[in-house]
Length: 125
Image: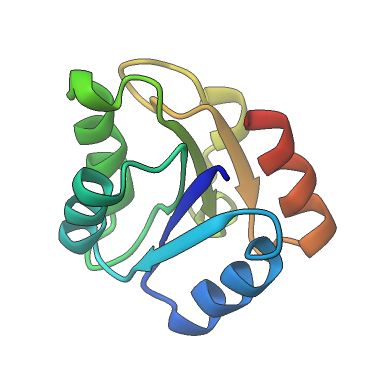
């Protein structure tokens, strides 16, 4: 069974994602960048679903970069989720995959519909 880690500071959103994904995947969750990176090292997920803004505005970016530079995690896919693109007027979707700026494999805008989440997860895995 494929493993997914959800890193988001919103406990309710983590619970919803866990509920949606648990039928088909083994799912763990974390509420901060530091906790998430620790779980990545122990759990070795196939996919990390990562929020942009958590304890800081750039925590998600930092976590994505730290996962990417670690050779142990080179095969881990990262799906970034956020609702800040409207506020910050940045087109994250077109930037996803840029190894320097946004080293993720995909992007979804919150709120994420369960059907959309499942489809994107299947596509990445």
